[in-house]
Length: 44
Length: 225
Length: 232
Image (cartoon, rainbow over all chains, first blue to last red; front, side, top):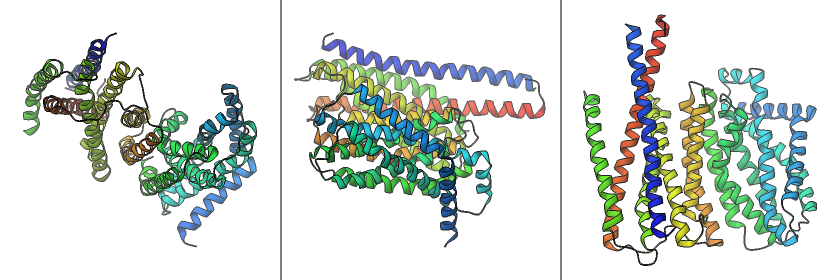
């Protein structure tokens, strides 16, 4: 792997990790929103 | 004697008496350390010069693992008989209990070290090329560093799942500067290569900082359980 | 009222941050001049150091939030503490991954146990243990215990740095990230990335904070309903 390959590997690794984390957060959001909706419906 | 001292003394003597009668913790720790020494001997086969370089690391890692064995049972006796609850509602200062437990662990681990050190010297043919007396402050300060934080984190781990693994998970990262200091100081003293003074001072600083922190925050942790 | 305004501000600020990130990455990859000795690999610097800076800032926020929680018992401070710790660990992980990727082509080795990278590793270990305590502790007093651990961690940081620094002066090794002065054009790109990553870190922390508050709201509604006897 030449020098530029390492550069791209570092940048891609960075965005992969950030992307994964943002994905986890987004999934948590939609799950919780759904839960809240269900709870409010059953609570009524 | 002030109430704080009398509580500390009473708790400490109670723990020592109980331990002396059963010798459970001491025996298991002793055998564990011996096993660690023997297994390390199979992993590394050092000659005299090499062993002086790595012995510091091996010895302190073995003591660290043995200390965790002791620390894990620090509070279990108190939990079993609801002694902790009694402490929470009593007007006794929490620091008295902490000091007693930490001192008890310190004595236990020091006894272990005193018994294991000659064994290490025999197995690895160790002879200190530097000032050997400096090993004593290193041992005292280093053991206290492990024991003071270990006793504190053992109390913090009481209500966690997987309590036994939680203690080393919390203790090891925080102990890294102390372990590095102990290991480096021991290596320098054994190989006579330079001065261990910086590491001993760093150990002393570590001990002062964390003893203060433990004493200041133990009440909070005890009430939090 | 402020809460709903902030809720609306979030998507707009998120888009602005994303655009800033794209721009500063372009600057780092294309506009910044190539370094003489290391070549193009040196551009990892524009990601590696700002990520470290952001991680340290977030851990500092965690310390302040933990102290505020211990003193005031404000649950929002605790929510901020867990959010900043988690996002800080994410950025710290990136520092620990980009560091070796940079070191390998430049010095031929993945890891040198140099001061900065080793201190960052220990910092990472301390905050991962913080997150593990939060995950494994079931009691209602977990926030108090975690706050205490955060203080211990913060007290440890200078000691960690000193012990590794002194060890390295005795046993010198190549330093990842190097020293030396920066060409003014490089400095400009570096500062831009520093600013952008700080904004990105703040946005992620804010997002995680809102998620934590939402989680607690759901738990509260759940327990209220079960108290009233509503079938789940």
